[in-house]
Amino acid sequence: MSEHTERTRGRLRRLNLVMFLPLLVAVGALLVARDAETWWQAIVLGLGVVAALVTFVQWAARDISRVALPCLIVTAAVWALGVLVVDSNSAFYGILIVGSLAVPQLPRHRGWAALALIVYIAAVGAARLLVTQEDVSGVLIGYVIVPAGVTAVLTGLMFPNQRFYGLVAELEEAREREAELAVIRERMRFASDLHDIQGHTLHVVKLKIALAQRLVHSDAERVEQELREVHALVSDTITQTKQLAYAQRRLNLSVELENAKNLFEAAGELLGQVLRETTTNILRHAQAEQVRITLSESGITIVNDGAREAPLPELRGLATLKERVMSNGGELTVEQKDGHFLTAAAFPHGRSDAAL
Image 1: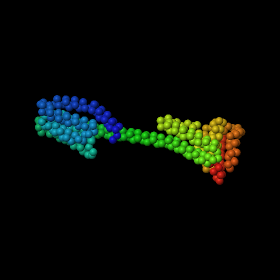
Image 2: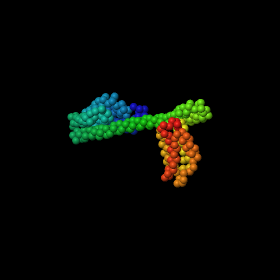
Image 3: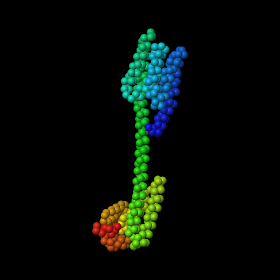
């Protein structure tokens, strides 16, 4: 059982003790003072009250099993002595408290145990007729009907009370499970974000280093540029990781576009330049609400819905890229139709390595 559940039950125990224990003490003391005529009668009736109080304290602590049977025996004997010797119809007070608390705690046969308790109280009360010449109806009411009826009612009420405590425990356990699931979900979210940050960067760094290795003997200036970008990517990843660790990282559109550009540039220089030039044109010249980017084995297609109803504008950057793509055996298509602007770079399968 968890510490939180134990604390909740501890609060309930203290609440029960504060609310009911003083009342039980006061009622028991009043009954003893009313019915006891001698000191030994006070001791007998007091034993029943003490047994009832001990049982209640242990019940509140959820440890009634250790005291239930001895206290039940004591209070049963006190009831019998009260009926047959002391002439006290309130002597059932002890067995009333002990029985109503102990019976609902039984693991099985609780109904039969409750019936046996009520029958015992009624039978002992009826035995009063054997030792007194009092009016029969008065004896039946004072020693049989009232004690047995009160015991039946209180015991019956304790069954839903026991269920209430069970529901409280179940709710606490459900709350703890929910808290554990929340922690697991947060850990998964953190792991996913960490994978997005570092996995993306490591993939880009790997491709950029591979590109630098191919160019190390032919284009030293480009190799230097690639290494600077690798250094910048690693530094940015360190910063993002720190922000994630302190729950400060927020998604940023421009940053994510830059990440996408870096990835495409690393995977294929020309395709990355097409994406960069096209997205730059979208941000500068279009009022797009939707942009769809499709990457295939042979090329890339970018379509946006922000094209103006006017002749196709002159886009020098794309015109220059078109020549470079054609020189590498590919084809760059630029179209404007029905409010959509399309840019597509494609390389034949036989020459797809030209862009990589």
